[in-house]
Image 1 (cartoon, rainbow, N blue to C red):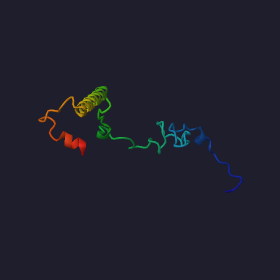
Image 2 (image 1 turned 60 degrees about the horizontal axis):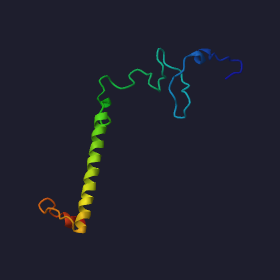
Image 3 (image 1 turned 60 degrees about the vertical axis):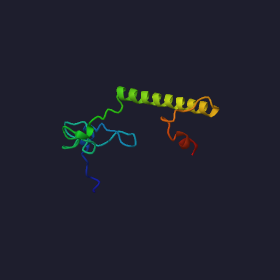
Image 4 (image 1 turned 90 degrees about the vertical axis):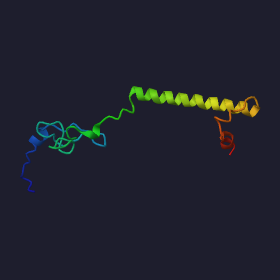
Length: 113
């Protein structure tokens, strides 16, 4: 380039910038598309984004209050059942209680093996 050429960059530097953040934590320095808040690389291009009626964005509901409470209740119940089995086993080892054979068939063989 010749030294006498003057660059006209005022329009470029005056245009609004993209509002997206980069991976480095700095704001994107590319110009935003006309009438949009993002540049072509960060979602301002035509056809970018999820399609209307996007089935991939459905909620699964695993973290609703009800499901969390249900899992907590199951955990509590399993903990109490484990404690009860431990107490029954301790009583059995002391000879204070014998497990009913019809309910715990194979239980002692399973526990000793």
